[in-house]
Length: 168
Image 1 (cartoon, rainbow, N blue to C red):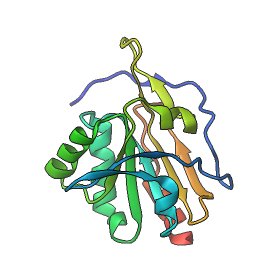
Image 2 (image 1 turned 180 degrees about the horizontal axis):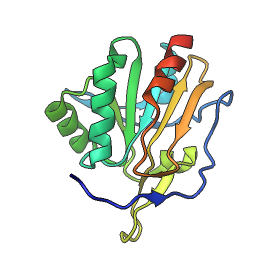
Image 3 (image 1 turned 45 degrees about the horizontal axis):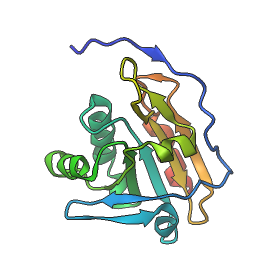
Image 4 (image 1 turned 90 degrees about the vertical axis):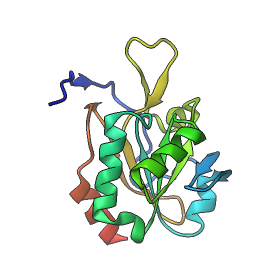
């Protein structure tokens, strides 16, 4: 059994339901290549489930993507990840885990800061990652569902997300 300390995270000043999701442009990685894409270019095609997670090698990232895969959300919706991992690390995650999604690379955590979901890693000066967060964003970039971790590790209520997806 994995042992770790649960850590309370400071309050996050994140965009909430009914607000416009901030737009950004970052490398968007799929299993074959990556290219700079904006969030707005994705929502122009319909709703997007934006899933922020810790770096790709961390167990929470694996757990989140396994749950999303088990629920088959990528069959019905554009599900995209967001973390500090590089495009190369994302390509490895997609390949090794069989993740059927695309992942935004945000190594400088600028999008995390823009969304108010940055998390400074304990004992690692100057290293900031994304705290776990989920935003369901409609075609107008209006947030329909928002969840942001209040402790580490913390995971969203997947049934709540599924209910929000059903309401789209």
